[in-house]
Image (cartoon, rainbow, N blue to C red; front, side):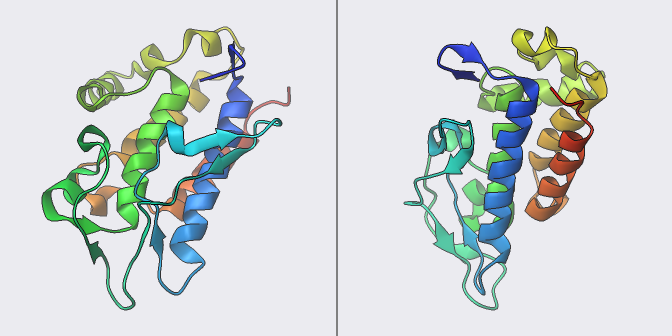
Length: 186
């Protein structure tokens, strides 16, 4: 991820991830009817001059009807970026955002992760070689490999095929906070 042609340092990427995770968790929990953004991706996240992340473009957002676990709606967005359950059922729930956020987490580590690359990233995890997807600029920083691995595994856990196997967004935000707190000060 670049800002003004300069790669963002690891701690900055973690702050961005935490900020967006907190925003999504807020949408999911702060209202009587959870709000699902449905379009979490790099172009819907902007950084201000202090690199504070802001989630924008709520045009695809939908509220879950009171007393329901999901909303039914036609599938919207780029097909290659959509939660597989939402794609097959038309059911939107909080786990739809968790899936999109997982893709975003992996993008923060390196190049954009395409639909087919998710399977590759999962196979890399199995082989304990997740470090291979990390942006070379990050590798130049003196960063504990366990932080990278925890971050990447968190992203992969968000990409589980079944929504029930994905973590809740509030738990993702807590885990990112723990990773961030484990980073040495700059």
